[in-house]
Amino acid sequence: MRAARVLPWFLCLCVVSRYPIHCGAQTCPADLQTECGDPSSEWEGSSSPESPQSSMSKNPMSYRWYNAEEEILGKKMKDWMRFSVAFWHTFRGTGADPFGAPTKLWPWEDGTNSLAMAKRRMRANFEFINKLGVDRWCFHDRDIAPDAKTLAETNANLDELVALAKELQGSKIRPLWGTAQLFMHPRYMHGAATSPEVGVYAYAAAQVKKAMEVTHFLGGENFVFWGGREGYQTLLNTDMKRELDHMAAFLRGAADWKKKIGFNGTLLIEPKPQEPTKHQYDWDAATTMSFLQKYGLIDEFKLNIECNHATLSGHSCHHELETARINGLLGNIDANTGDPQIGWDTDQFLTDIGEATLVMLSVVRNGGLAPGGFNFDAKLRRESTDVEDLFLAHISGMDTLARGLRNVAKLIEDGSLGELVKRRYHSFDTEFGAQIEGGKVDFETLEKKAMEWGEPVVPSGKQELAEIIFQSAL
Ligand SMILES: [Mn+2]
Figure 1 (tube, rainbow, N blue to C red):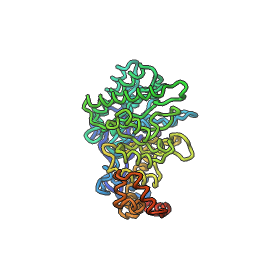
Figure 2: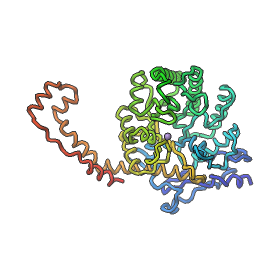
Figure 3: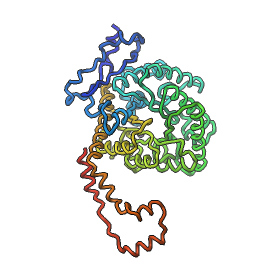
Figure 4: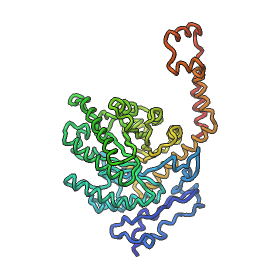
């Protein structure tokens, strides 16, 4: 039987929940020999979920906190979260590190970078997304389709894979965002938009143009610019102003192209302070905002905040999210975390409940992220090598953020943290305070008041109380 041959890998796995079941439509098999036939005859029974009544407390292949349809704070959980699977980590992550060879020998991989392999991998991607029960995915152009000898041939490869992805997406699944990979090929060793070589600038523009077109074709909701190698290793050989001018011209071109093709998605910039360059130009949210303002691009872009990049820049993820949010720039979150003892971008799945609660606090204050969402820009540890681990990692990441959302609901319902903050600024809730906030009080008037009032009485900041209130919601 053909069906029997395709069972060995993750088709037999399925995520269950104490709530509704999350087993979507099946895709054609990624199996080498099996052709894509009638789905009902191929797959019937192979992915039957376990009963929702199965023992949740002991089954790790289940959601304990995430319940897609449940309404919390006036919105369904799935609409707060808008989870997305990252193609590059989940399907191109090999487990290789600077000291060792790949460790992940996924059953659908044949060890080549062929077009046939790319197609099989794409089927595996959609099989996984359907099993996990999410509606979104993110991709780089070069991750889903192999490079060829010329740009035209490479574009043709991409078109083949995009056509397949369009078919496999069905009516439910869409890209949360697409992006162009402008850092892996040697041509981009000095950067893409900031390369001193004009041919590289043109090549990168052509790549973004095409990647934006296919994202639009697939119904993508956003398009991301991660700096890649846009930065410098030393200022001794770098004209920083000229490179930043080039980057602005490049982003202006991208914004113009978006309008020209009628793509309504949000353009997002993803700050990161270093790696691979010593100094990335999009250092953090504030630096990126200032760049966008200087070059008149502030209305064309929002930010994609990645938690691990936030900590690399010396900030907490919450700081970066709030900086983006209060400036109307919070567009998307790359859901991951770093390791406090390792100084590089480890891209781990977020499992810290306190951090997840702070992240969700910003999301709730933002009224959600749509048309952005949470992209799992996170990878399995090198030592996690079972197909099952891909599921466990995503389930754990989704449940952690879902738990964060439930905690935020508790904090809001309780109200005492909000009250504590409000009380700290109480002295400005006066007629005179309002005049200051309205910019109507000059320094002469303030001096007069200071003389009249004498030494101010400065109240406690109540940080420990705030921490107790926060902890009680976890
Ligand atoms: Mn990262």
